[in-house]
Length: 375
Image (cartoon, rainbow, N blue to C red; front, top):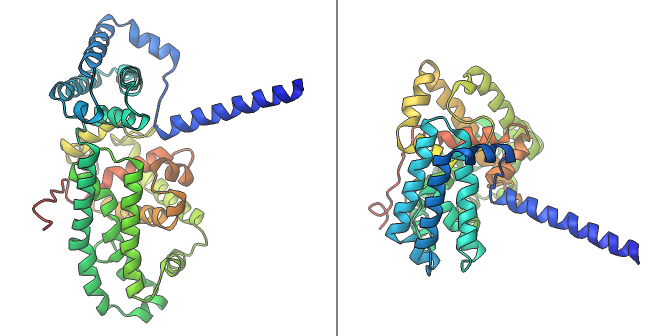
């Protein structure tokens, strides 16, 4: 009897540990080392600032629902204030303080003060603060529908008209023709449809919950497979032809090609000299700087000036393979950046993903204003 009880207790501990680990991984929680936390909180000005910020958040969030809070002007001003403080600490080189506020302080105050919110709504508020995102879930759904309409008008319908000019038999036998028609980033089908997975970020939608991402990825997959059907083929055929083109036998082999491309670019272009983090995933404040404030042109382009065009060509091929990997293993959720990164390279997967994200603006629009374009 005692052995049974001990076994049940041990099993429960292991199960709970697994749940906690999964939750932390899924929600991108970072628990700082105790020593670093103590050092941050030794600074009296930091402690005073955070105490004041915590009090303000508690007061302004009282009696609010998710929708009324996210649209409240006082809340929005508070979010901008805390992000300004993060920027100031960044300029001062106080990385531990930035990490503490970004990963610990924000989440702990939301979890503590928003007891009437669901776990899902709490996560939306955490993301709202980190990203300065004030769109409600209803507005995010509206952005998504606009994006679907945009994809249909701009890419899907024109591609359907172009299908009549494709040599279907040659598509199945000629690798170069297959690449030109199906994969080439400048001209044809796959890249043009799936780049919209990341152009969606340019609409101002902000944080996208997982269920919304899955819906949109399903939409893109369906549109691509409808094109394949018009050509007389399906996803299994496309997968087979991709493998034949790259001379591989599995998705793991495709992941190896991506890793090989990354290692080549890392050495060829001295990627460690660039501003992009190499030891962790991008924080959203860093991505705001890079994508919205000219950081791409002013920092990275200048460092690559003598090899920039060559690098752009290499990065497009790199992105294409990432799109292919995501689509061909969609059922395993390789559109999730952390799962995909770990699958490609457990050691440097985060850096590989950062490089992929950084270059989604190369030679493409930085902001997508859908309303005038979609009727």
